[in-house]
Amino acid sequence: TQLLEQSPQFLSIQEGENLTVYCNSSSVFSSLQWYRQEPGEGPVLLVTVVTGGEVKKLKRLTFQFGDARKDSSLHITAAQPGDTGLYLCAGVRPSNTGKLIFGQGTTLQVKP
Amino acid sequence: GAGVSQSPRYKVTKRGQDVALRCDPISGHVSLYWYRQALGQGPEFLTYFNYEAQQDKSGLPNDRFSAERPEGSISTLTIQRTEQRDSAMYRCASSLADGVGEQYFGPGTRLTVT
Image 1 (cartoon, rainbow over the protein chains, first blue to last red):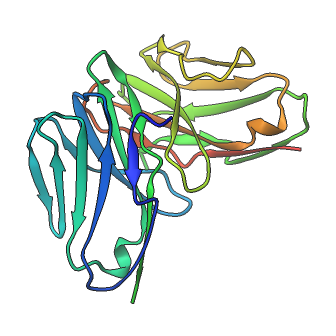
Image 2: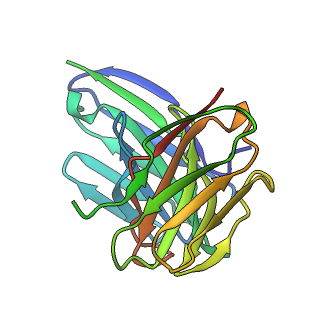
């Protein structure tokens, strides 16, 4: 079983639509990160959230960390074809600061 | 560039052979991580180092897998007596320090065991 469950695993939408990706766990994390990965490349960090209830915005992307620090969401407004890629959430448990645990990823395809 | 580099980028080996995968982290980065990633899935943690000390190897699948970072810089992941199930993308990452810091990922080594 995955410690971090991402949903949906696949998402295919039209340009201009909004979407939300969820990252859920029954465990508490000291921080959560969101990465984006393009084909043939390694993951690239988008944001880190560390405080329960924290909301961060990055242009059309909004990231939220749950109050209990067990879940997070990524919302994209007016998706564009350039947003296409694999989105990964990853968390650090309080007891193990060096070990980054990844979710299984959400593959997003934005059609023009 | 000054990013994380990995070599070789592609490795094809026969079942039973040993392989060594190399990671050259960003200069000055204290922490180095090894992951295995299946296509379309998130990276799976294998092990990580702070300087030359291996801090956590709980993700190594079995004792055929080992890693070292003897001088606190370059690291080698070694797989002995490879099996077909070892075929995967092996990624290395480095960070200034462990914890909440950003991990910078390398391009990976695609290992195919025939």
